[in-house]
Length: 366
Image (tube, rainbow, N blue to C red):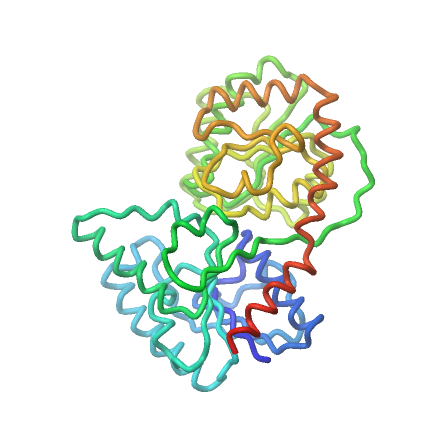
């Protein structure tokens, strides 16, 4: 079996990349498959997550200009180059199946290349972000969206996402984690942790605002936000903290030791506008962290068990988020019970059974 995975890069921290590394390694080590990782803009950088030494990596060197839309004339020219290079790669490698996990233009033209090779499209963002409008731009986006019907299978991360994809062959396969044996330890630092790429969808400004409403009540507590991404947005968030004199909250940058940081913290906070099935929440549960999150479309509600291992707050309600965060900080017994339950509940997202679903899906398409 030869599997070809397509992603734009593999040098930046992110849930897609972390998940992809574990899938590739599992297919090689447990099933003995041959796996190729094809990127379009890796820039000869080091892999952000470890890959089995038998992984074959091919970078097409398309290097889209991320400061412009993918439909900018300069990027459209690059997409033609992308089409030709990927077509040539498929002809040479002749994989048994191709899996696309990214959002570059390749996701739209891939089904038309080497049509005898089955292709799977994997969605890592919520279909709720797709807005259907009747203007020219909206009709064009709808046209592109309907091209997903050309794939042999679509994979979404939770059952609530299925309704956004009115196509045949839509499967639900959630993210997974490598479940780690954690000795329950409740004597932790008084730290609230958040993590993710610095991007508008993560809405870390909401977390900063919510903390500003209650920070003075809890002078022994800190908030740490881990991640990298948009440099200008990072600067804006830091300026917001300084300008408004918000105490004990800081952007920490990326870390390769997120699990260790989680094990030292007391709460995990998420204020995203949308989340399909955030791997970081699975990791937080496995580390014994109670989670407080917006009930955004649609990942958190498919992971968190409200009032058992965390809290779901009405979507985009900063004031309510602050109140519920304050409630958890003040109630040690509730946090302790949630922490114990979080570790237990994380087991249902263990790696082996979910990779079995992937293996069965792939083999069903051959």
